[in-house]
Amino acid sequence: MNVAHTVKQVWKDRIDKDHLDDELASFLKDGFSELEEWTEDEVVRRMLRAASGQEREAVQTLARAIEHRVRERTLFQSMTCKVTCDLRVIGRDVEGRPAIYVCAKSQQLQLNELKSQIFLAFETAVQLGSPDGQCLVIADMTGFSARLNMDPFTLKQLADSFGTIFADRLNSVLIIDFSLLAQTVWSTCRALLSERTQRKINFVDECRAREIIQERCDRQTWESVLSALEINRMRSTTAEARASHAQRTSISEIPLGVGNADKAG
Image (cartoon, rainbow, N blue to C red):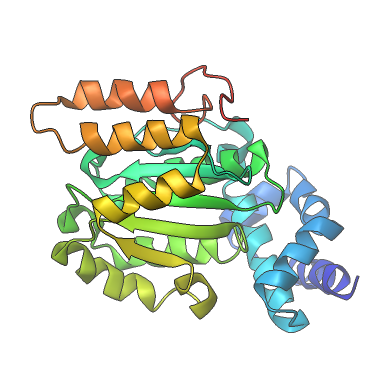
């Protein structure tokens, strides 16, 4: 109750004192449903968990999360975006958590153009639901391009979003075949992530990843993930074939725009 009340007061003060930029002010003219939705008990408890019970930190995190939701209101209302890579919800783990998969080989555009798809993939995972409200991420780094990802501003934006909107949503992150090129980006990302989040990230090679995925995911999911690992490593496979495989193995029509049911749920 303290956190919710304080956050509402923070926003009242910002509005009363006109401490809003033009974009934010424009959105708030159309209403402020995010304030009520994001100060409900379940959300506040999640923010407190992310802040290890520290109310002041939870207030700051929640206030920023609400701002992010307002600025991305159009995206989260439409739940549609330009498809820029194969990022999707590919299935569930044995505990029922949604599993998000992405392969770096599918990325063709700069990191800042991937943001909307990243947000919608995680929002979709949240909406699919899990016992603890969390999800796992499987990031296959084969084909990684440092040139497309060396954008400190976008990296900071993404880190801030995951530290606010999606606070306490990550159960674990499995990063496969982490290359020397990727380490340059990781050195920047690491400083932006909390120690709590860093502890959830595991770096493994493909062989070990296959073992972990079969242990942690249900059969439908690990079959989909293992086939994705294979197709993304075959030199003869076309981009069109990889995109088609991504659509077939997505358990939601968002964000890839296909109409599959939740086969793993």
